Length: 244
Image 1 (spheres, rainbow, N blue to C red):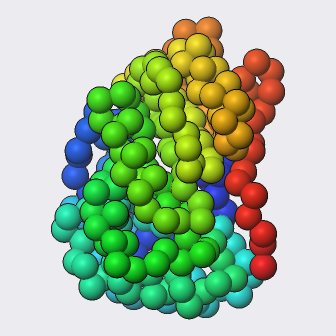
Image 2 (image 1 turned 90 degrees about the vertical axis):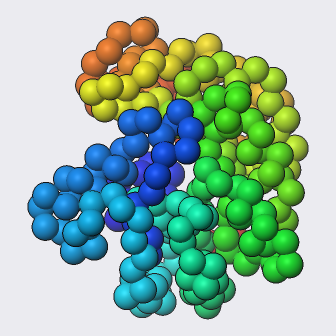
Protein backbone atom coordinates (compact mmCIF):
# COMPACT_ATOMS: atom_id res chain seq x y z
CA UNK A 1 0.00 0.00 0.00
CA UNK A 2 1.04 3.61 -0.52
CA UNK A 3 0.97 6.48 1.97
CA UNK A 4 0.28 8.86 -0.92
CA UNK A 5 -3.36 9.83 -0.52
CA UNK A 6 -4.29 9.84 -4.21
CA UNK A 7 -2.99 6.42 -5.22
CA UNK A 8 -3.05 2.82 -4.00
CA UNK A 9 0.43 1.44 -4.67
CA UNK A 10 3.75 2.70 -6.02
CA UNK A 11 5.84 1.00 -8.70
CA UNK A 12 9.43 2.16 -9.12
CA UNK A 13 11.21 0.59 -12.10
CA UNK A 14 13.31 3.78 -12.06
CA UNK A 15 14.77 5.55 -9.03
CA UNK A 16 16.79 8.73 -8.72
CA UNK A 17 16.55 12.05 -10.52
CA UNK A 18 18.10 15.51 -10.96
CA UNK A 19 16.66 18.92 -10.13
CA UNK A 20 15.03 20.88 -12.93
CA UNK A 21 12.92 23.66 -11.36
CA UNK A 22 12.09 25.32 -7.99
CA UNK A 23 9.64 22.58 -7.01
CA UNK A 24 12.60 20.19 -6.82
CA UNK A 25 14.53 22.22 -4.25
CA UNK A 26 13.58 20.10 -1.22
CA UNK A 27 12.68 16.89 -3.07
CA UNK A 28 11.09 14.30 -0.76
CA UNK A 29 12.30 11.43 -2.97
CA UNK A 30 15.92 12.57 -2.65
CA UNK A 31 15.67 12.68 1.14
CA UNK A 32 13.98 9.29 1.25
CA UNK A 33 16.52 7.74 -1.13
CA UNK A 34 19.39 8.78 1.09
CA UNK A 35 17.61 7.35 4.11
CA UNK A 36 16.99 4.05 2.29
CA UNK A 37 20.62 3.99 1.17
CA UNK A 38 21.77 4.38 4.78
CA UNK A 39 19.46 1.51 5.77
CA UNK A 40 20.95 -0.75 3.09
CA UNK A 41 17.65 -1.09 1.22
CA UNK A 42 18.09 -2.99 -2.09
CA UNK A 43 17.81 -0.70 -5.11
CA UNK A 44 19.16 2.35 -3.31
CA UNK A 45 22.85 1.44 -3.18
CA UNK A 46 23.59 4.56 -5.26
CA UNK A 47 21.27 6.82 -3.31
CA UNK A 48 19.51 9.30 -5.59
CA UNK A 49 21.62 8.59 -8.67
CA UNK A 50 19.27 7.70 -11.53
CA UNK A 51 19.02 3.92 -11.86
CA UNK A 52 16.79 1.56 -13.82
CA UNK A 53 15.61 -1.69 -12.21
CA UNK A 54 14.64 -4.22 -14.86
CA UNK A 55 13.73 -6.86 -12.27
CA UNK A 56 10.90 -4.63 -11.03
CA UNK A 57 9.12 -4.56 -14.37
CA UNK A 58 7.20 -7.73 -13.56
CA UNK A 59 5.61 -6.45 -10.34
CA UNK A 60 2.25 -5.29 -11.81
CA UNK A 61 1.92 -8.49 -13.86
CA UNK A 62 2.07 -10.53 -10.67
CA UNK A 63 -0.80 -8.60 -9.06
CA UNK A 64 -4.26 -9.69 -10.21
CA UNK A 65 -6.33 -7.36 -8.01
CA UNK A 66 -7.20 -4.16 -9.93
CA UNK A 67 -4.97 -1.45 -8.52
CA UNK A 68 -4.08 2.20 -9.12
CA UNK A 69 -0.29 2.41 -9.44
CA UNK A 70 1.76 5.60 -9.17
CA UNK A 71 4.69 4.94 -11.49
CA UNK A 72 8.11 6.10 -10.30
CA UNK A 73 7.22 7.98 -7.16
CA UNK A 74 11.00 8.05 -6.60
CA UNK A 75 11.99 9.31 -10.06
CA UNK A 76 10.76 10.71 -13.38
CA UNK A 77 10.13 8.19 -16.15
CA UNK A 78 10.85 10.83 -18.81
CA UNK A 79 14.18 11.95 -17.36
CA UNK A 80 16.72 12.34 -20.18
CA UNK A 81 18.90 9.58 -18.69
CA UNK A 82 16.19 6.91 -18.86
CA UNK A 83 16.83 4.87 -22.04
CA UNK A 84 14.11 5.06 -24.67
CA UNK A 85 13.92 1.27 -24.83
CA UNK A 86 13.35 1.06 -21.08
CA UNK A 87 10.44 3.51 -21.31
CA UNK A 88 8.98 1.31 -24.04
CA UNK A 89 9.33 -1.71 -21.75
CA UNK A 90 7.45 0.11 -18.98
CA UNK A 91 4.57 0.86 -21.33
CA UNK A 92 4.56 -2.73 -22.55
CA UNK A 93 3.84 -3.78 -18.96
CA UNK A 94 1.12 -1.15 -18.67
CA UNK A 95 -0.54 -2.40 -21.87
CA UNK A 96 -0.28 -5.99 -20.66
CA UNK A 97 -2.07 -5.17 -17.37
CA UNK A 98 -5.48 -3.71 -18.30
CA UNK A 99 -6.81 -4.62 -14.84
CA UNK A 100 -4.72 -1.80 -13.36
CA UNK A 101 -4.59 1.97 -13.83
CA UNK A 102 -1.16 3.63 -13.96
CA UNK A 103 -0.47 7.26 -12.99
CA UNK A 104 2.66 8.78 -14.54
CA UNK A 105 3.79 12.21 -13.37
CA UNK A 106 6.63 14.16 -14.99
CA UNK A 107 8.33 17.54 -14.85
CA UNK A 108 9.59 16.80 -18.37
CA UNK A 109 6.43 16.72 -20.51
CA UNK A 110 8.44 17.69 -23.60
CA UNK A 111 10.02 14.24 -23.74
CA UNK A 112 6.69 12.62 -22.91
CA UNK A 113 5.05 14.41 -25.85
CA UNK A 114 7.86 13.33 -28.18
CA UNK A 115 7.54 9.74 -26.98
CA UNK A 116 3.82 9.65 -27.81
CA UNK A 117 4.03 11.58 -31.07
CA UNK A 118 3.68 8.40 -33.12
CA UNK A 119 2.18 5.97 -30.59
CA UNK A 120 -1.03 5.75 -28.58
CA UNK A 121 -1.29 6.17 -24.83
CA UNK A 122 -2.74 3.01 -23.24
CA UNK A 123 -6.31 3.58 -22.03
CA UNK A 124 -5.32 2.58 -18.49
CA UNK A 125 -2.52 5.16 -18.28
CA UNK A 126 -3.05 8.59 -16.71
CA UNK A 127 -0.50 11.21 -17.72
CA UNK A 128 0.31 14.15 -15.48
CA UNK A 129 2.72 17.02 -15.04
CA UNK A 130 3.91 19.04 -12.06
CA UNK A 131 2.97 22.70 -11.69
CA UNK A 132 4.65 24.54 -8.82
CA UNK A 133 4.67 28.12 -10.10
CA UNK A 134 3.76 30.24 -13.11
CA UNK A 135 7.16 30.43 -14.83
CA UNK A 136 8.04 26.73 -14.87
CA UNK A 137 4.73 25.01 -14.23
CA UNK A 138 2.13 26.69 -16.42
CA UNK A 139 3.91 26.03 -19.76
CA UNK A 140 3.91 22.31 -18.91
CA UNK A 141 0.10 22.27 -18.97
CA UNK A 142 -0.04 23.15 -22.68
CA UNK A 143 2.48 20.42 -23.48
CA UNK A 144 0.50 17.85 -21.48
CA UNK A 145 -2.68 18.92 -23.27
CA UNK A 146 -1.06 18.04 -26.61
CA UNK A 147 -0.88 14.33 -25.64
CA UNK A 148 -4.04 12.30 -26.30
CA UNK A 149 -4.47 10.53 -22.97
CA UNK A 150 -7.79 9.37 -21.51
CA UNK A 151 -6.86 11.08 -18.23
CA UNK A 152 -4.57 14.11 -17.92
CA UNK A 153 -3.79 15.44 -14.47
CA UNK A 154 -1.83 18.17 -12.70
CA UNK A 155 0.12 17.76 -9.49
CA UNK A 156 0.27 21.27 -8.07
CA UNK A 157 2.60 20.34 -5.23
CA UNK A 158 4.41 22.07 -3.75
CA UNK A 159 2.30 25.11 -4.62
CA UNK A 160 4.78 27.98 -4.31
CA UNK A 161 2.76 30.98 -5.47
CA UNK A 162 -0.59 32.17 -6.78
CA UNK A 163 -0.98 30.58 -10.21
CA UNK A 164 -3.47 33.14 -11.47
CA UNK A 165 -5.99 32.18 -14.14
CA UNK A 166 -5.77 28.56 -15.29
CA UNK A 167 -6.87 27.10 -18.60
CA UNK A 168 -7.90 23.58 -17.61
CA UNK A 169 -9.26 22.55 -21.00
CA UNK A 170 -8.48 18.88 -21.52
CA UNK A 171 -7.39 18.41 -17.89
CA UNK A 172 -9.43 15.91 -15.87
CA UNK A 173 -7.91 16.03 -12.40
CA UNK A 174 -5.98 18.52 -10.25
CA UNK A 175 -4.06 17.61 -7.07
CA UNK A 176 -2.95 20.46 -4.79
CA UNK A 177 -0.62 20.28 -1.82
CA UNK A 178 1.81 22.24 0.30
CA UNK A 179 5.43 21.37 0.94
CA UNK A 180 6.50 19.31 3.95
CA UNK A 181 9.84 18.85 5.67
CA UNK A 182 12.00 21.07 7.89
CA UNK A 183 12.72 23.60 5.11
CA UNK A 184 9.22 23.68 3.65
CA UNK A 185 7.98 26.85 1.99
CA UNK A 186 4.55 28.21 2.97
CA UNK A 187 1.40 27.90 0.88
CA UNK A 188 -1.44 30.43 1.25
CA UNK A 189 -5.07 29.47 1.58
CA UNK A 190 -6.17 31.96 -1.07
CA UNK A 191 -3.89 30.28 -3.65
CA UNK A 192 -5.53 26.92 -3.01
CA UNK A 193 -9.04 28.32 -2.99
CA UNK A 194 -8.51 30.09 -6.31
CA UNK A 195 -7.48 26.80 -7.90
CA UNK A 196 -10.42 24.97 -6.33
CA UNK A 197 -12.90 27.52 -7.68
CA UNK A 198 -11.44 27.27 -11.17
CA UNK A 199 -11.61 23.48 -11.06
CA UNK A 200 -15.26 23.71 -10.05
CA UNK A 201 -16.16 26.20 -12.78
CA UNK A 202 -14.32 24.19 -15.44
CA UNK A 203 -15.69 20.83 -14.22
CA UNK A 204 -12.34 19.34 -13.22
CA UNK A 205 -11.96 16.96 -10.26
CA UNK A 206 -10.12 18.60 -7.33
CA UNK A 207 -8.04 16.71 -4.77
CA UNK A 208 -6.51 18.55 -1.82
CA UNK A 209 -3.61 16.41 -0.61
CA UNK A 210 -2.17 18.32 2.35
CA UNK A 211 -1.19 21.61 3.91
CA UNK A 212 2.29 20.31 4.57
CA UNK A 213 4.58 22.09 7.00
CA UNK A 214 2.54 25.29 7.17
CA UNK A 215 -1.09 25.54 8.25
CA UNK A 216 -3.87 27.55 6.67
CA UNK A 217 -3.26 30.07 9.45
CA UNK A 218 0.30 30.68 8.29
CA UNK A 219 1.87 28.95 11.29
CA UNK A 220 4.61 26.36 10.82
CA UNK A 221 4.08 23.08 12.65
CA UNK A 222 4.22 19.31 12.10
CA UNK A 223 2.47 18.22 8.91
CA UNK A 224 0.17 15.89 10.84
CA UNK A 225 -1.12 18.85 12.85
CA UNK A 226 -2.11 20.86 9.79
CA UNK A 227 -4.38 18.21 8.28
CA UNK A 228 -5.92 18.06 4.82
CA UNK A 229 -9.09 20.10 5.05
CA UNK A 230 -9.92 23.27 3.15
CA UNK A 231 -12.67 25.35 4.74
CA UNK A 232 -13.39 22.40 7.03
CA UNK A 233 -13.93 19.96 4.16
CA UNK A 234 -11.83 17.15 2.73
CA UNK A 235 -11.60 17.31 -1.07
CA UNK A 236 -10.87 13.82 -2.40
CA UNK A 237 -12.40 14.08 -5.86
CA UNK A 238 -11.07 11.62 -8.44
CA UNK A 239 -11.50 11.44 -12.21
CA UNK A 240 -14.35 9.25 -13.38
CA UNK A 241 -12.59 6.03 -14.35
CA UNK A 242 -14.35 2.64 -14.43
CA UNK A 243 -12.61 -0.05 -12.40
CA UNK A 244 -12.27 -3.45 -14.03
